[in-house]
Length: 616
Image 1: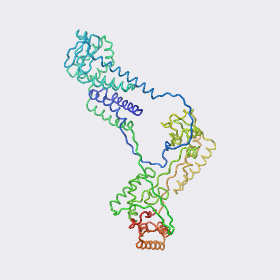
Image 2 (image 1 turned 120 degrees about the vertical axis):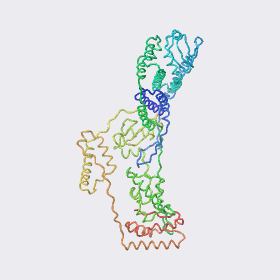
Image 3 (image 1 turned 135 degrees about the vertical axis):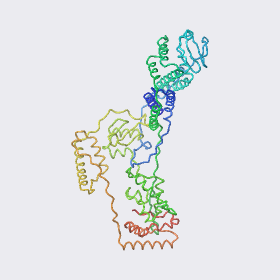
Image 4 (image 1 turned 180 degrees about the horizontal axis):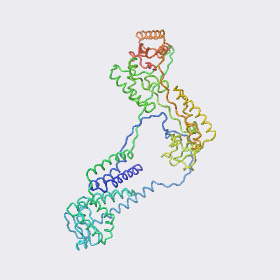
């Protein structure tokens, strides 16, 4: 409900301002009529338009939500009388609806023909002559005028033509539509403003219709002004007051070109787009990442065997498969370089892994390298990186970084002890760990539906903890040491930059952020993190004798696999073969058969014993 009321009101306000600034003073009154009605419909519809957002997790340490974390604590609350604001709100709303409904029915009854009224015909409409002094007005199929003024010829024909124009153009339907909306949304002042703008545009339309029948504009203006000034009806005076007459006279002389109207209308397109994006109903979808199965070693009584994860390979590897692998590998590598993070696309990465394991060693070395290689510790070629570790609980995070954090209750900063006490009492629902406006990691206790009635009131404001002399000296020594090492590395171009731990960097950045202006002027600048080191060159190589040993072991296993009906991996021989192959240079590996392809032709017989590919 709150989303609908706030966003629909914001949309209606922006659309009305656009009309007021760019359309009201133009002569395209029919277009303006449709615009005003559609503005109301659009403003009421936009909050229900779904704007879907797909989010791929980019960070190993996302904002932590503790809504599902169980905290075993007991809290005793004193039962106090509280107002049920929901009942009060709906009661007030219901009273307003009843009052507006009574007003609507009462106004409708005034258009009923009374026994003392005289009914005549004007064109194809009823002309109702009333004995009471009334302002000429029209509704649905009738024009209502004073009997005395009409019989004494005190009502100019142009005034009757003006009211007839209202009936011809069915302006009553617009007013009925607005009145029904006002019954439901009586509390929104923008609908009263829109009603005024629509009724004023109705007057512009009626004036335009009268003038288009051949009546001189100046003559019509003089007649209207003379009739208004000589009217003794208070209702008439309120309807045709001078500022409105002046504005109507001005619009009668206005003639807006079609080019101007088109240009003004084009401005509406980006406005509507922004309104849909900012005020629509947002739905967020998170894309999953896939986990990796781990290697499990099983010790048999007779033989030491190793059960290793089996990888799927293609029966017939085609150039189209290799081309598809290169495209996906480049896409993933560029995406990770742009976002500076390790990202796994579930289906694409799995398909790319299948193609990679189906290639020969020569094909792997001559095409795009495995995009995840070297990005996560000792990740091997062809392996999918594991998911990030689970985030710590709020209390665990506080215990580890207590002095480096800021603490907030709703929007107010509080001491650490009070924050810990609140979390222990009310649980971790609504607790969030994220940087504050100063960039300092903070514990934020936010108000949610789960803890709305249990959070304590806001405490008196506290100031940020100032930097002590000890902290200032400690920061200067650390910053000076790292800045000097970074300057020397940059000057000598030897990439021997200072090694800065993330924990230390966060700690001293927090101290630097809490310094006063005078302290910062005397302190060392905050060191910047060094650039990544250049990639290491491939210097691996084994001797000719070791190459011969590798090929001897390989051929021995080939002969064994031909004669055996089952596959057994001998741990010592296989480990030696893996050690020799992984120690080879790329050139040596390309000239010798990869050891893991021994099992490729026998993978159905191998079941789940297929060894993994080597690390690049």
